[in-house]
Image (cartoon, rainbow, N blue to C red; front, side, top):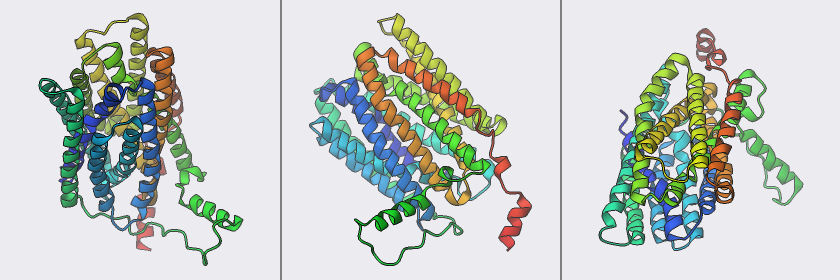
Length: 437
């Protein structure tokens, strides 16, 4: 186990708690609706999209990747101080956006650090191990939220307990930053990475048409090749990105309104809501090793298909129940439902990152992973706004049905993604000749 995994694990303790604490704060403390929860999710996802593109490019070109990880974890703690002090919905959303922008750096940088430059055959195992550690941290965060709120309810109000918990999360983020400074390796971009585009001479007037054309040309050069490439690898990456958008938009329509569904329609106490999400994360943790092994045996595309089919079944079952019943399901059935949600999540997340890592060219892998996270964020932007207003206007069954439709489209697009990246790899002999030359 890499020592620096502990930093991300501890950071995910804070993220796991806040993933449920923020929606509950909007609904219970700030008087927001499920539509407001969706807007907050979309705003944070938008900043995550911008951050993913920026950090992914820097991960490929910067001499050191460690500062990005340290900065993202440090800002995490600062954002929780702001959330603790927030007295209005816009201020809370602002701090969530700041946190999301800087946390996006970990999406591509952590994977690049995990897989390193070693044996490609171990990538799925390393990515799975990293995800398992972060999922364990998330699980501990959910347990922390449940225990803290249930204990504090005996001594103080929910508002005081919630704000105190945000301050506690700030301390957890600070501890994660200390571990990042101590243990994250100083790995930089590949020595043979392409140099940045040559700088133009002079400084033209920013308002001139020439300056605008130069700016657009520079931006075009920085875009990863899936937007402009025409070979089979680039076509496969474009298809994967479309499928990823559809998949995570479906995940968002399903997931964003869920905490409010539990708290409002089913009248489940906040501490118990956390416990159900603990079961979800248990499913994530126990399924990562299985997803990693299956990726090596049957391929990443097959694992992604299994994750999508299981997610489709969850959406259809959830929509049907919400249409046919007004009461909460038995706790044991709801617990099993959350467990399966976690298992499907682990299959989707691991196989998606592994597919992108293998299809990407070595010199642009950081940008591709950043782009992948940006596409995931774009899906969550659509899902955040759409699911909130659907749930508010048509009931909670509507976003579940929308999620099922998006997952079906993702399954259709996935059929055109290669089962593996082997056909796109250079023959070993040719690669050796290039290195010798």
